[in-house]
View (spheres, rainbow, N blue to C red):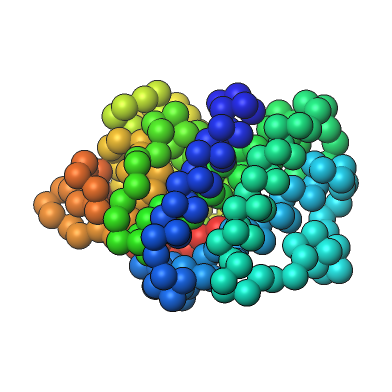
Length: 263
């Protein structure tokens, strides 16, 4: 995806998140984040948007220390002002990324063509996943994530986060997972060992220990641990109408849910 497409997705998903929050009490639980209420979600995403905007807007070359982060975030609002505070931070982040020069130099933490490309992509997916959380708190699903964004988000999660040395997805023996989309050019194979996960995008002939096949929009949320599932034969039925086909070792789904977590 182009930087402009990521910024457009950030704008759209952030607006949808605000719409879901506006029709929901701040005390409503967030089923997809069991420790949170809606107010916690808004404070989190509002914090992240302000934190992320600081790097390209100020050209910061290193991570913010505690004092710098406090300065970037500013004071936390009251409950009455929380939704407006979230909207202001989201709009400011969109404006910063929109106005930033393509060659802006600043800190980032995943491989990307440029720092601007990194921040636009990361915040688009941060916001899209949490928009799903806000919809869950509201008790009504919003529009499905665009297929192109879902494909891109699966790739960021698997080839960006899961391969990091800090990832906790590990196994004391080789275990393989194949992720295959049915509505776009997406196929990823994970080799899980005691070392950082290795991910390739080739379609191998030999079967994996676990294969997940389905629409990108569902795989995106399933891999981000946002879909509750109930087993039914070879299929994981999700909260939406489509299905993800599961073939192979279901214990690997449990390993994924327990350890494939981004903090």
